[in-house]
Image 1 (cartoon, one colour):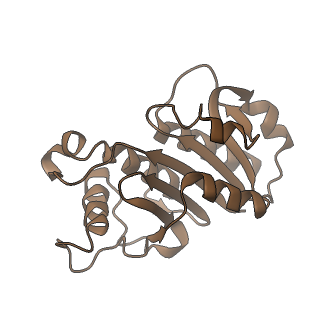
Image 2 (spheres, one colour):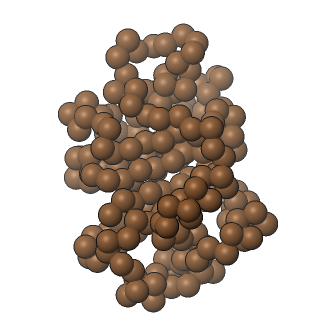
Length: 198
């Protein structure tokens, strides 16, 4: 089974990035870094067959594939991961690191809707994380542990989840409950529930 998460940000901007004030100078790239760590790691190890796609409006699409990273060198804390990621984003300009453990990130020209359509064609089971969706426990019972899964986590504003383009794709809306969770916590909860299925 391949597990993929999609997350989007219209706010990330690293033009004034400063490592001592990541939240204030990166347009909340720290949120993306937290999600990457939640998706790819468990108990300080890199997991297998997991991807997280970060759709950054100002910089393009970045695909983190757990199978392409070295568990020994992968930055497993938010500050270091963010610093390496900024370096990767700026790779055409002044690079800070000669060797970057994130150099295996793949860049894509697909926007989020094109990417979703691509995975629909690949027969992935796709879910949109939405508080008003169907309860996870109901869907969980019908999940096929051999099926490839894609979860659309959304963006900070909620605009993606409520967009006309996404609604027109008629995907299953999935809820983890009435409580609002941070995107990174949502990813961890999904992985925890899926580990019970497998």
